[in-house]
Length: 87
Image (cartoon, rainbow, N blue to C red; front, side, top):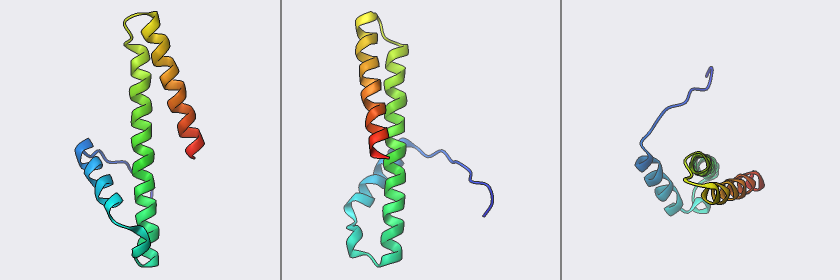
């Protein structure tokens, strides 16, 4: 298949796709489709968490004062730890 490439899709489409995949009960699907369902849903969850992490990091950069920066940094570190524990 060659080198993996990335594409950009609107956030709203990603969120709608996650909602759709969550509404489909994976255990009721045939085995190969069930595996694909789980793989795709997991990939979208991971992408969503990484987007949240980038947003947390931006909160550090654009904080108005030291207290906001500290709070944003704590949120970022919490989010980062959460991502590592889910892997």
